[in-house]
Image (cartoon, rainbow, N blue to C red):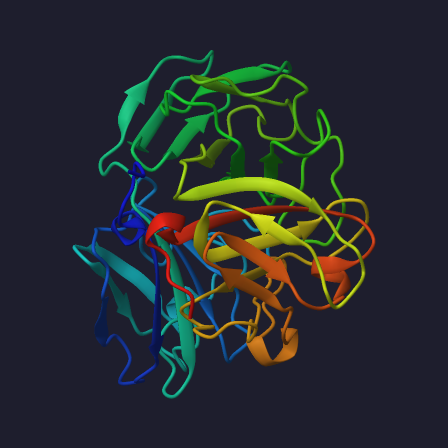
Length: 350
């Protein structure tokens, strides 16, 4: 029996179509089997930026971070007052509020939207496992924690407690107080290498060479640790049948590699690491049929129609690449992060 029989109780994808309405009007987006703690939203049919919010930092028009921007909190330029924002997190979803303009971010009439959502641990608690004190919201069942911390006035690497009691294999960090790169750790990058969300670069020396442990991760001075600045980190450890973080080698052919995950993926994020390449996200809510995988890019505000199809085909026990798009299947190496729709034992072919 898998540890998580129903992945939709911990991670899920919402889609909706904007209804417009007047300035300041609110709308509830529902359909989840949990109260989300981390919400990542993107307009699918307009070029609005990605919107990342969480229950630890709080929601509202001054809390947005954008994966396609180095902007601080609020994401710079702050367009939420014009184009709308998330105003509350609720049981089963969240509330959105229209801005004073065309509501592009969340609720423009006729536009399509997607929200990728994770369940954390609700209210954050203090963690003193690292040399930097942190606040953590932990869902240990699903291997996910939201971590906030303030860097001390030092110029050496420090450690931060993540609260998982398991070693994270995928960590996303962002400086909340300055225009700064997103810094991303993945277990299959070379020692000390890190990626950033907001561009297409390959992995570079942005991360400490000290690997994370089951209690802390090490933040590198002048990257994930800048004196007196506040940071947020999203940390994941793998859970069999629910989440997987790994690598594969592309073959530059239309009959691409099969990647075993042990479950039918609900969400797959891929990035090329041997050279430049776009990030790509596909999911089975926007793409309910095999091999019709329209992508969105964390490094870009581009619409689905602009990005096009990247042919990431979900299967009952993993995914297969069925095209030689260089962002997912050139001659090179790729990392991925994915979460389940159903464990292999319970997955049905579509």
